[in-house]
Image (cartoon, rainbow, N blue to C red; front, side, top):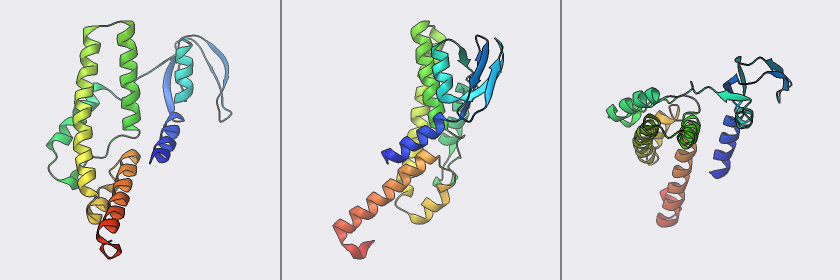
Length: 185
């Protein structure tokens, strides 16, 4: 499972992030060979890992418009209203990675300037996220026991959640086989 999650994380790191140039960029060659130039204040897209490096050098500032507290509140509301396992909502692409990075960004901003509204936003976001994750984990765990339910929800799971569902199903099959013998699988 760790290997699959690591590969998913690496794929996320190579997705494009929107940034604003804090300094002029004369010539920056992206891994795909694209050459980027930008004036101070220009909005550009670069690989996420590169955005973090350049943000650390104060060359760019990452624009956090991929995820917000409002998005989390909407998702939380729909998850908490969900009654049936099969009604699990499809989350935005890279949802968990984006939220993790957004929380890390909030933490950094709080360390730099501990403003009460930032602290409250982080607390609220963590609370909502924990409840979303718990509800989705419950759905994944229950679905792992039922092949038909697993198939029904699979298309609406994030790739990270699909890894968990697959691993749980394999673990349950293996456990049943060991405990009940090979006829039980």
